[in-house]
Image (cartoon, rainbow, N blue to C red; front, side):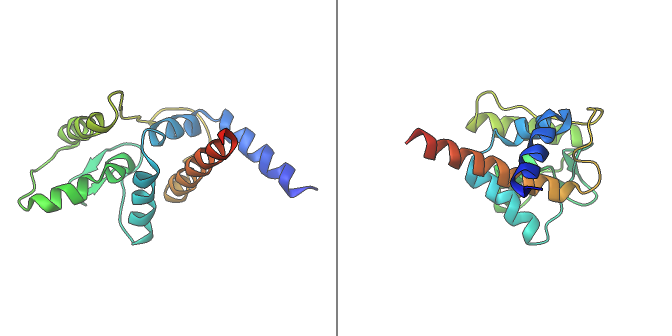
Length: 144
């Protein structure tokens, strides 16, 4: 079998997955630099919350969108960090996101049907970050 064909079939089946679509939409709100921040965060052993929460106070862990926006670094630079609940963190993430992208929205995928982002969530997020950046790069090459 042609491995290129298998990759195209895999990409096609992922594009049909509603969970993939939801994550792709959410992460596509971020710039490449912000996507790289997520990749670096995980690569350096940082924790992330995925799916149900946007912030977990017990682990001081943020969702991928918050990490991409640089919220943990922003709060660390403030010194005395405000205390967040998941609900107050959602508001804060959205406010910061809308400073960069006026239509920014959180994209919870809890309850969204599909097979993507079920068992290896960290690698799924990283793979999608790389995919989005590659697609953008391809679009730029094609536009030139």
